[in-house]
Length: 522
Image 1 (cartoon, rainbow, N blue to C red):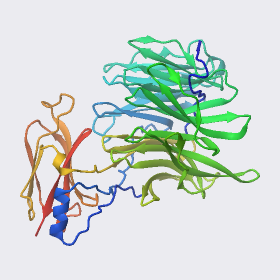
Image 2 (image 1 turned 60 degrees about the vertical axis):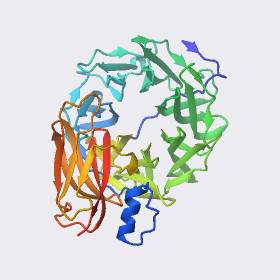
Image 3 (image 1 turned 180 degrees about the vertical axis):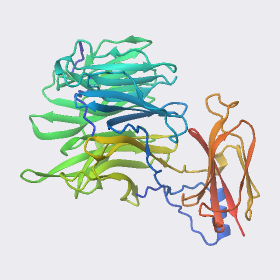
Image 4 (image 1 turned 90 degrees about the vertical axis):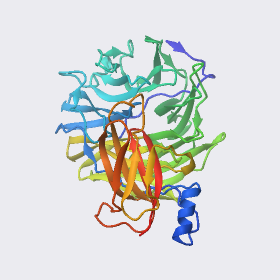
């Protein structure tokens, strides 16, 4: 085992057990004296659109009829969604399951039992992919037997799943893994050991490194939760710490230099007492922002939760911003930052500790106020959310059950309109006549992605008003290569004619999208 000098790195240890609104984009700031002037502003000046879209109807992606939990999700470079989770056969017999969707979550493959495990408890799967779309799934092997509990990995090479690889060899009692792929295609696996220390190793060019234990000689205990890799060879983490110098867990930030395998000294975000749930995302300036679950003691033996948000400002962190109040139990906090640099927070909310009924809630800040929009709810339990942002969409996977120890993995999607600057838009979408009265023709060439210019592609063409509200979907299907043409008759999804004004027509193919405006004058 290789120890690193404690002055060279930031320690962090046992990762968490995941308990796991009207959102907006910036409002138009232009004065509108009349419809002609507003169209002029719309067509010729940069603007941003407040997204008033809805979360899609949740889709059951497991459909196993038993107890599924702990979903993890990744979207590969072809836009395919991959989800892994654990599934209970008996109290001590759990499987690792997997499914995927090639059409942005509309249809899913039959759940696959990755291990064909007949009697052991496998748990806590995590999934990642590299630039070639190879998949890496880590999990805890033999969870119930501490003396033989290990971290293992499965690799999918695009054609088949390989045999299990032991990652924490020689370290029985390892659990709670996390897998990440850096910009140099190195596969990192992190895990907890002996409920005290955090270990990791990485795979480079098919060869595994020795394992490392940051800050193994620390008096304090440091835990990791979530990590992100960025292009400047830095890996950012958040987690928690325990110390004899203070009571309760405190939020911590860690930074890892991938080039020289060095960790900065741990940085306490603030003095809030937290409970496990903390997540990190990086904004467009690669500045970390966090959302976490704060625990406040209001009386002896009585605590309340609140969800907080903070951003790193130079060498310090901003004063925590209250996202959601303290009138309920809140768990599983997740954070994502979209293409417009807007922050989204998702969490599970229970009205009290004894009531299992819960709500999956989405928060986004509008005019300095965090606005909540429910995504889903369950009369018994809704838990284990995993949220990611990819290709103009937020995706959230979670467990939902209506009876004890019975429920499936569900997924919902939130489509975000991109801030559009018309002069920079590609010319693959042509709209005429513009302005027009009713019959508007839309000519397009399916957007080329990853060498697929000679293959059929799934295309979504939708119409939005200038507030970002969805008006109608004109097409959501697979088109052959080459120039295509559609007709919009000026009707909304309710079958009624739309009002005079400006509208946005957006073509989306996989992770690519292009938008153009059209004026309706009758």
